[in-house]
Image 1: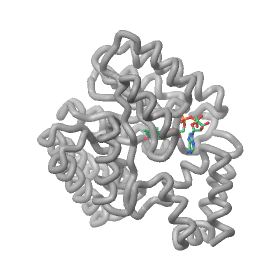
Image 2: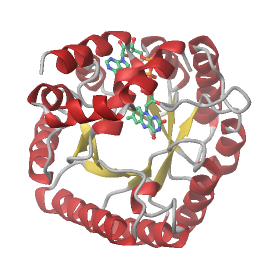
Image 3: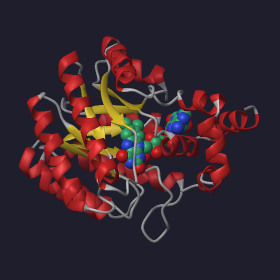
Length: 302
Ligand code: FDA
């Protein structure tokens, strides 16, 4: 993880900074570069526009690090509503969920029960559920929960972070289960005893894991990156293979998203929505130095 990312994380986690950004118009405007809106209705409108432009969607109802049962149950209900809307609107979309939003941090069986209910509902709606990967406190539990749920339901997917040393073993364990595996670099600050630290190392690990993923036959690879060199590599490794897709974040490299779709590649846009956007925004800021300028302008120009 770069020095820049660590500095951004430290700065944005300071309580006064969070307060200014979440409570001012400038802060909210900045968030809406990366977030579809506060409501499911707004997210559905964005998803419809993306589908009309030939892009697939994954809806993410923002929220994480939930510490009480009522909030975790409310998040589950919100996701059930989300699946209802996907079916009712005929959207070409699935959902992306975070297990700590569903209770993993304080009641793992509650999170497992939620995943099971969501996967069942998604199957009825003809869609799938992708589990995002959060920070390393939750990696082992997330991988285990995914493996159990995927064996039972068959319509799940999981994000794997190429910065973690353990990911190669996780990929080898999970690829035979089918489903879809989303390869991404990883967005959290992790220590050197468990994760690569430099951009070069993380990209090299991505390339090596991508090669393994593309060679695995049962799984649907999802290549989640805006890195053009890795996208080119995926295109060449995927030649002759039909069941893989690219994934990018809402608001990032939109021209490349459209270009890939126009070239005939399945291209899924990760569309976050909801009012708990601050942690998501801080990760997007940490990924690109230029975003910090936008953030500082929102902070001082409130
Ligand atoms: P990199 O950061 O090198 O970016 C390449 C180029 O893309 C940059 O030079 C810039 O032009 C552009 N770019 C990238 N990020 C940008 C930003 N925020 N704003 C503006 N431009 C930007 N992580 C995780 O830990 N768990 C998860 O579950 C997921 N899920 C996920 C889903 C999807 C669909 C995507 C695309 C990404 C994730 N991630 C994630 C985030 C991922 O781990 C990673 O942090 C970001 O994708 C940035 O890494 P890139 O591979 O894009 O490369």
